[in-house]
Length: 146
Image (cartoon, rainbow, N blue to C red; front, side, top):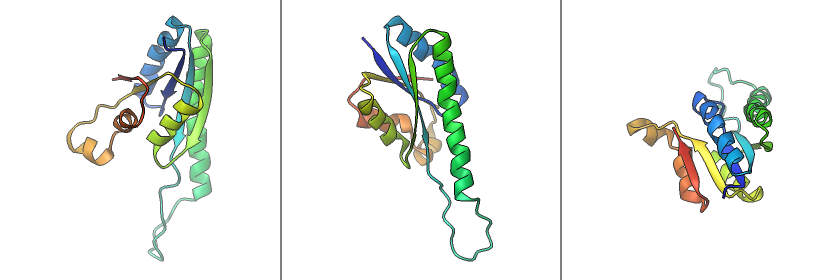
């Protein structure tokens, strides 16, 4: 049924807990996992001579790339230990949901399994929900774990 599962991970505790579930699901269906972690580009924009110290863009992106690689490598290692094939990919996008939907298409995935932080109220309004955006922009089945 689910032969090729996309698993977006942000390295959070919720994503770490969801890793076991997605591995079990892939194993039960004889499937494979494509783990993706999305690096958001440097968010700081210098605003003239304000005296504000702005972190170096190259340093920021290099550190964040290391983190995204670590996120997917943890999933790949857990999948390998369970005997489940896993491809680890990283992407850079200002809109993580777009990168997730695109990766699902590019890798021929037939389902997306992702953790949701389950934010409510104003936090959800201001922070947005990548999970909600993925649900709105894909035609694939999406299993949301909390």
